[in-house]
Length: 213
Image (cartoon, rainbow, N blue to C red; front, top):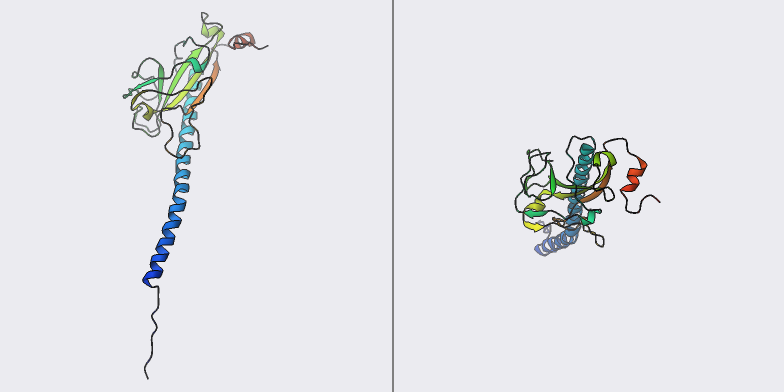
């Protein structure tokens, strides 16, 4: 008595259909995964930039870092953005020697003892101070406003003037991004009031164009 064995398993056609379905599903979710990864990376950059800005402000306030030179402007938007020259000469936790023209401070997050144009985590703080209503007075007595922009160190890789916020447009990088982000735009912009002595209310009011009324 003979036995008949039926063929078991998937046919070639069924296997090809399964592969096609999986390919379509992967193609559908790939953009979502890419967007998720890019947003997480950008969020981390903004977090590091915020840490760099706050650390710089605290160091200036406690006089561990020399304050930047007087900018002579009364709003952050009037202060020019730095011009990248393709090189970045910065020792960790000190002011850069190149490019020149603005007070650029290196915050080294990857422990290489310098800020490099190929670093993914190093931050460069552009700092300026101003006191519009007391430009000729002693800032150690009247205090001043400290303005900051924080850029990625790789923004200085090419030769170009970097971006900044203006009175009519905002260029600060967003946390949500579908790609690598706009490298030449600042990650963070902020200001802080600095006084080397016990501050007086009148000095604080004098640093605002409209006063405190």
